[in-house]
Amino acid sequence: MHHAVQAAITRFPDRGHAIEELARTDDNFRSLCEDLTEAQAALARWERSTSSVRAARCAEYRILVRDLAAELAAELDRYAQG
Image (cartoon, rainbow, N blue to C red; front, side, top):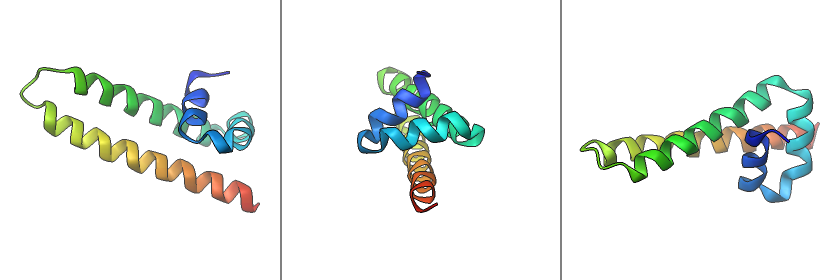
């Protein structure tokens, strides 16, 4: 299983089957999973950083992760309705 798909399942464990199915059939959904994974990784790097801009970058990436997760949840909701 692709690491981005696994990361999405970790975030939404009760929707694992839908995530796997969408990732298998929808390139845009898979790309969204990859974006979320990359944003989470960047946030983790900034959280460990000693840079003077650490706090600002962490805040930016937290918002990005939140927004990407919301978009992923919306796609899962559309899939469940369809």
